[in-house]
Amino acid sequence: MKVVIAGGGIGGLTLGHGLARAGVEVRIIEAAGRGDRLGTGITLLGNALRALDRIGLATPILAAGYGWDVVSTRDADGNVLHEQTVPRTYKPDAPAAVGIMRTRLGDLLEAHAVQSGAAIDFCTTIERIDQGDDGVTVRLSSGDTDQCDLLVAADGAYSKTRIQHFGEHLRPTYSGMGGWRYTIPRPGNLNGLVLYRSPDGHIVGGLPLSKDECYLFYLENTAEHMRMPPDRLGEMLRERLAPFGAPEIQEAIELIDDRRHISFRPFDIILVPSPWHRGRIVLLGDAAHSLTPQLTSGGGMAIEDAVVLCEELAANPSVADGLEAYSARRCERVNRIYETSLAICRFEQHPTGAGEEPMRLMAEGHAILAQPF
Image (cartoon, rainbow, N blue to C red; front, side):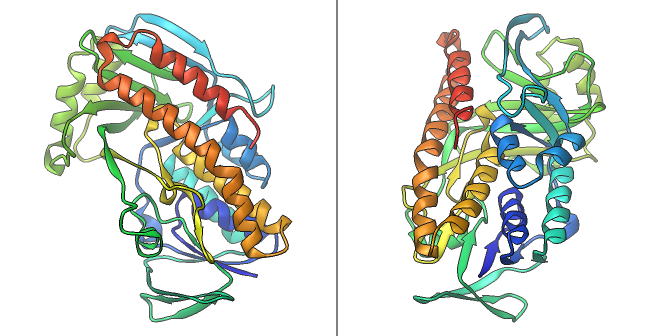
């Protein structure tokens, strides 16, 4: 069996490793260059760690990141208002979640995928796809042509493969919120997910990535889809953090440097209805479901997708049966996480009357994530 994967992000690399270690011939097509990975950090909860454990990756990823167990809500000056412990759903002696730099995670996943036997074409795109009853033929920007039994579209929320083969109507929509992210040295009192809330409802958050690093994020509500001017990102982030008096936030403002990577991204969302396949083309990760970040589960859902697809292709007698089983296992679970995360996002857009409802929804979301998949 041969599988071509469009996209070498978290989902594509996880799938490439899982399939290759099971003896499947795998070729990953990635548009970016190997050295082009950017990003701040990512959090993987217990569900993602359980999935990674099934393909032998939980231990190295835990070792490369920073484990944590607590969600803390604080006021703008840093006073603790509420804390809750996230259930340890991977192992009793392992943390509930791990934070890790995206670049570090990407390098780890790539190394394991290649070691397992997957081939990766960087700086390459799929220019044409022709599907037949017995397989898929892809023509690449390099001029090469390849044939496979299955094409996996793991090419993100703006997936060209999805638009071409699942319909023009399946495009992301703006959630009404975007997020700023910036990596800084980790303060000693930031040992889990920390949310600072100002009196007017604005939110700054922090997540640990290693013993020495963390990233801060600022959630911004806008009625219109926003793109921030790249030459003003540092100035604009300092303005947004300035009203927060917590000493660690004020120290972070002094560390903002325009020469380092500052990220602003509108949260564009999509949830593709079941089934997630058309013939021998199947969606995975953000190409099937791009979530708001309130449950820190976008990457985790992509990892779950990859592991479940590996399992169902191995367990079923045909590709068609495997794809049907994959959609059956994934769609309802992902829908619940998508809707719960979006509900928290909506409350955070009108936070003054939200009360404890966002924290209740977060606990509900964590309970769903703790269930088997």
